[in-house]
Image (cartoon, rainbow, N blue to C red; front, side, top):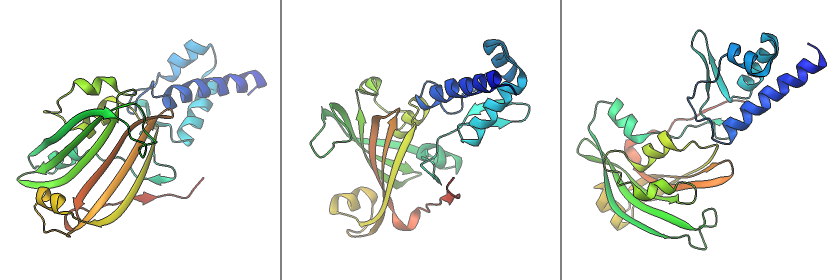
Length: 233
């Protein structure tokens, strides 16, 4: 490959990477075919293929034989630890699902919420599987990043499911711990006060802009958290 072709390959890779990392291209979006990219950039298939291979090696796209290439779901640093869609997981198990919105208010970010700023939508809700409480959720959504959230009632779709389906994220941070249920938490989760809970605290960003903070509490004996890890590159 000539120097000019190599530079063009880097340009193709860079433009597609920018679209993915900025959130303009959401996870699951189909990437233009190699033929389309050849026409767009006026180059050879080899040049396009080199760019696509580099994007696949970085984990930014997934190449599927006969189907084409798609924007990959982002990973949390080096761990293969996805953001679960609780609603989809419960439905996939064949159980009835509902999200009970317990509290909703619009307020300004507090000093201790430095990762979020400005106008926030504060939500508290209960994920229910069948007739059993599955998880208690407290969530803050940045209305600067997601202004349309202010007009939603989350009657048909939980806040987490809606964000996963409509607001692409480019970076996430998880914090996992074990805690004892407070009196209010125990009441809502139908447990004894002090019962063991798995606490998952998560923050997500889109191109450096904070999107949401959430804390989910799961009954300790009812939730199995599995993560697969690969070697750091």
